[in-house]
Length: 331
Image (cartoon, rainbow, N blue to C red; front, side):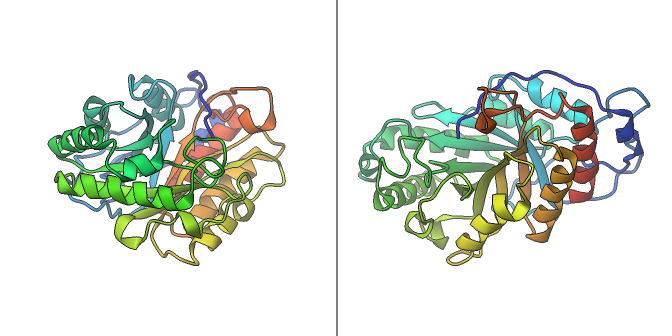
């Protein structure tokens, strides 16, 4: 679901100082121990080591798991991601942003991400358009221009088209447009990129957790020839939420028709009574399913309800310390 919040920098609690060997010290495709300690100085935010240059190959096949983030201001600004890295000591390996329909590819953001050792993750949103029309070529001039810009960038990017289509809150989703039209549009988008030589794209088919959406997933599946990774978006809204209820049960349904690597593509733990334990369980669960990565949705409250609460780590020193510890093990 759309959740846009304001980023505010925060400090790491003293407990973070017990964590060493944090991620942020090697290429996302070649995870190696850091040559020096990354322990934060007592009472100060963790230091962040910028990774070495990323490979330029495709598809992305990471040797380790990639911790990523989304921050308000992307793609216009990298400032929120800098604040996130400083606070957590975790240099994001995936930097996500949302791209409205007819918005051009932000090569500047992708280049900045690469300079920081991260892959740009673009959520292409076909807002208010006919998916049947997209499949029929009605948006080809836009798609070809976007693909040509991606090709010109020359480095790997991650792209998802029409994420969370199994929910009803987007105009391209369940109850608004048919699964058949979505599949046809997805395949056409991928075909256009391939025709334009934009081959360094890792395509992520992204669904919402079944804890907030009920549409069966299989009818929306474009097929293995059109998907590199499957993505699951999910949130811990309540203290009773577990990895299985938020991510695992949805992934189990996906595994009935796809064995593609999984990216936990948008996730956060709310301000629950056992938030730190749930953060630890999130990362443990991600390891158990051999996730290629995890993208934290680091945003403040958008509305005063459980589904739009404060997901930010910087506002909660205890949760921040739990994230830093868990991410170090994850990476």
